[in-house]
Length: 66
Image (cartoon, rainbow, N blue to C red; front, side, top):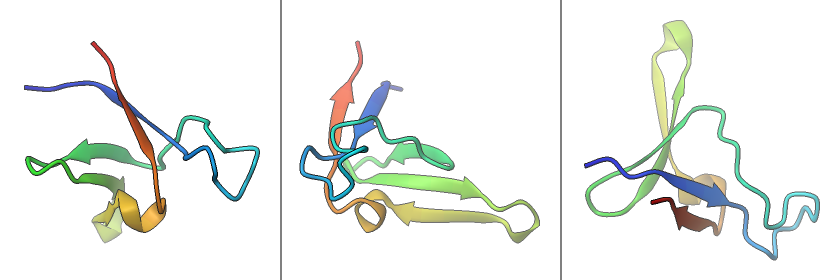
């Protein structure tokens, strides 16, 4: 089952222009069955890169859409 969600920067983010704003990934966001979020980036001929979202953002907020 697919559920839609949005990821937001934490309110105490070091860049105050992004604090509390929606995170715009350079690729696609996905969640695995254990609830871990990943950012998947298509690198063209180099293939796919998969990063744990916690490696990109030290903290983040997730809002689930109905």
